[in-house]
Length: 192
Image (cartoon, rainbow, N blue to C red; front, side, top):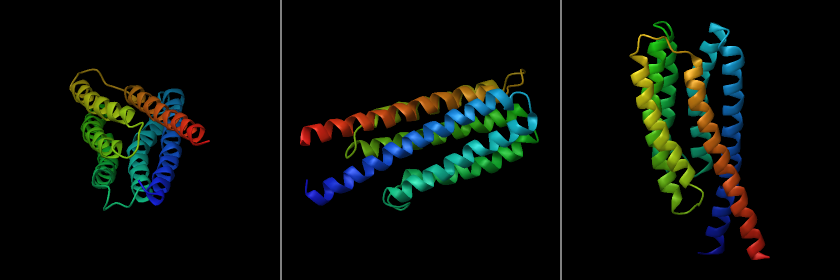
């Protein structure tokens, strides 16, 4: 590799580290709000349920633009649209009840998980620490199937069902951020 390519990879690695850690922090705060306030207030739960896919749309848009643009990152471009449409679908599903909302989250978890998996596989070639994002995408798709099954049950789900999913996502993003941090420190030590 030439020096210009190495510099671009280092810059993207720095970006990904900050991005993954920011996604982890957002999810941790979201889970805390969902469990502490959202389980007690229907209004707060509704706002949080709409906010979660909206945040994902914005986060994917920002990451794609920082990583070469939406045209160069097809899976993220599709994920922006999928998450944006899910935001609208959650708003509509809230009028039908939590079973409908969980069904929408299930479909979205499958789609966004597979798209995240595709993004991680594409990045794997040039940037390490993507194995966690591969696992995260696969787990998201699997969780989506469980959400759809739960949405068909007579028991009414709550925001706590989604909070568990978001908590696991936070863990995956945190591990990825830490993994990139360690890898960058090792690279600096090896270069010194």
